Structures are given as C-alpha cells and as structure tokens.
Image 1 (cartoon, rainbow, N blue to C red):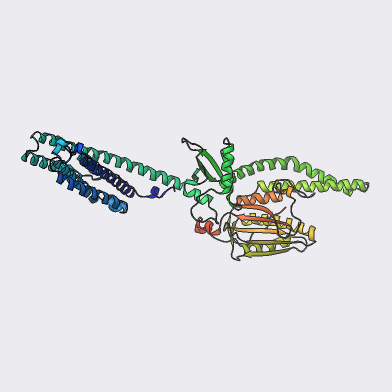
Image 2: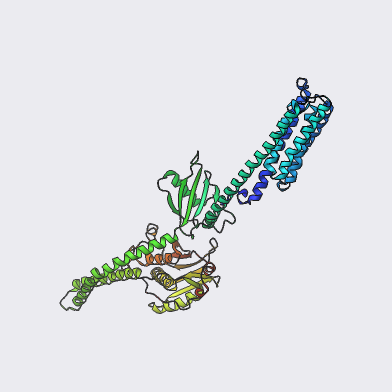
Length: 555
C-alpha cells in the first residue's frame, strides 16, 4: 500500500538506514562519554581516579578523542547512509574507541580505575553492526591492549599482579558482550526479514485486490491507499497521486459518522463515472475517530447481477400477464370492434366503444413492452464508429417514421468510437429520437432532433446526446422521469425511458437528463469505457465492427 517512501524500500536498504541511524546514536554516546571524562579530569575530587598515573597522556588522549568524536558526529549528518553503514566505517570507529579508552585506562592506573568497563559498550556495539570473525577481532584487540597495559603498569610498579586476573575477567566480559550482541542481532535480523517478507506479501495482495482500500485521517487526507482505490477514485481533471478524498465520498463519510449503523453507501466520483460502493469501518486504536478504513468497490457487477435477477422475475411475471390478461384483453378488443360495426348505436355508445378499443390497444402495448424487456438477450457490446453506425441507423429509422423526420448528426471528432450492443443501441436511440420528434412537433410544428457526440473533456469517455426542441420536463417530473409506467401522455405506456435506461446499464453506460440549450430536453448516453480499453481486454477474434445494426421495435 502506498504510504511513505520507506514502505517501498528493499530490505537491504532498510537495513542500511537502520545501521546508519545506530552509528549516529552511538556517536552521540561517544561525545557524551568524552565530556564526562573531561569533567572528571578537571574536577579535583576525581583526580586520583582519572589520569592519576600519567596526567599528560590522559589529557592528550582525551582532547584528541573529544575533537575526533565531535568531527565524526558532524560528518555523520552529511555523509550518505550507504557510506556510513559500511562495515569498514564501523570497524574503524570502534577500533579508535578501543585504543583511546585503553590509553586513558592505562593513564588512570589500569583496570583498578574502573575505566576499562567503558570498553564493554564499544565491543558490544561492534557485535550488533559487524558480524562474523571481523567482529570477534575487536574484543581480542581490546583484551590484548588491556593486558599489555597491565603488564607495563606492573613493570613500573603502579599496580599489583592480581590486576592480571581482573583484566582476564574483563576480557571474558568483552567477548561475552560481543557474542551476545552478535546472537541477538542475527535473531533480530532474521525476524525483521520474516516481517519484511510478510509485509511485502500483504502489500502485494492488497495492491492486486480489485477492491479499493483506504485509510483516511480525521482531516479527510489519505494515509494509505492501494492501486485499485487510486483507479476507482481518480478523476481525469485531477492528475497524479490521489491525496484527498473526492467531495462526494467525504459527504458519505460524514453521513456515516452521523449514522454509523449503515456502513455501506453508494456514490459517484463525477457525473459520468460508475456507481461506487463505500464500506466504512473505524480502526481499533486509542482514538477510533481519528482514522477510518474504507473499502471501495465498483457496483457495476452487482447492478448487472441484480438486473439479471430482476429480468428473471419480470420473465415469470410477464408469462403470468400474457396468460391472465392478454386473452381476456383480446376478447374485450374483439367485442368492441363488433359493437363498432353495429348500426343500432348512437353517438354516445360509439364514443364509449372507441374508448374501450383505444385503452385495449394501450394495455396491449404495455404487455408487449414488458415481454420485450423480460425476453431481452444479454448485451454483446462491441466497438462501433459512432458516425458511421448512426448514419446506418438513421436510414432504417427514417424509413419507419410517418412523415418527414429531420435528424441532424454532429459527431466531433469524427472518428469517435463507442462500445455498445448495436441492437440495444438501436432501441435506445429509437426511443429517444421518437420522443424528441414528438415533443419538437408539439412545440414548433417541426419534427426535428439533434444527435451530438464526442469525447467528454472530464472523463475522456465517449458520449451521445439526443436533443429536441420541445418545452423540456417540469422540475417536479424530473425525479420520476425514468420510473416504469410514469408518463404524462394519455396514450403512452411509461416504459420507453425506463427500458432505455435498463439497456444502457446492460451496456455499461448511463442515461441522464438535462435541459438543452434549445429549451427542450437533452438525453445523454455516457459510456463508461473507451473503445481502446475494451479492445485491450478482448481476444483478437472479437475485435471487429458492426456494420448493419438491426432496427428494434421502439416505444
């Protein structure tokens, strides 16, 4: 998961950074010890313990050691971690510490002064950073120098012979500390390697998930995210890595904070984007409200599955309708026709007979539309050149229209490609064009519509628009526009726009309404996929264009 730069570093690089950090911390310890020795040497109270045998040697060694430590400490702030973490750098620093501390121990009277204990930490530090035989050489150097110093002090009669025994014990401690730290370091590195492997596995699994995963802070900034979340939430007008949530998702997150019982909410990143489903969960930490775990899923597949279940239910319902309603409806229609042929009826009876006949025809259309929806085959989308396909479609459409129908086509760029089932797209455009021609004629007396198309500047996906010259849809009717059986026409069935929207969803497209510049209605088909994306996901045999779309019955 994308979080910080360290999360993507190789294991060896992380180890180098850790070693360089340890060296910097160790150098701070060396500077501290240097100033401690300086304080002890200056204070008259401790003069008998520090530098008692050879004050000049102690002073010279201490000043040199202090200056070297300060210079090395400043250098570690600028030297690259790669150079600082090398074994040679650690070996040189620790060896210098052993020599300096051994000289100061000798100048203070040997191991009896207690300064030899300060050598334990450098050899232990060497065991944590320098593994193998090279590391074991450092406590050996320390014990040899200590023994030599004790021998010389006995020779000049500054200590007793029993100090050899103390030096031997101290040398054993040197080796024990070095071996102990080497063992612990190996175990820690083995554990770190196992943890690093598990982290990589988890990161790989999460990055390969189709479900988007995000960790969001209380200020709506993104702490962690995987590739799927970046793809699902990215909008074309916001390039680069996503750092903050889209405002629509922020609204859903705030709704969840107010009502945490419903943890799943749907949203769109932009108007022409697919419907996404967000599931929220508070992280288990001391402050649960500070960070939130969000799972993002594309609900297109769920909607397609729900639509298939809905179609199956409609199929069973339509079979019942055909059996229970269509036969009696046929008898009613036939009886009304016989009554119209009778010569023994007045004008009132003739009008009633006409109403029965008209309503029978309307009810039969409703049944046919429901049967058409339930029997619809699964969508078979394919790439289509929008302009060429629409011209072929209009040839068949105009042939089926009563009277002259003016349909102007404007596709820019001309090579715009769309992905749809030609049969379904024929029915969708047929419904929209028929409605547009009817409302244009009512308002202007001219049967005229416009078909616009191209590539959306925001989503970079293709679209088609059908624009009429009517009066548009009332604001209170817009929310019911795509509901089944909702119509403002006395002879309409209210299924045309509903069927068109269902067919768009089956082809991974969205059908929306807006007020056109002409004052009429604009129905926009927004395709959620580009033709290039579709072709890349299909085998070569399926990459062909549909040349002759069929004209389906429209409502």
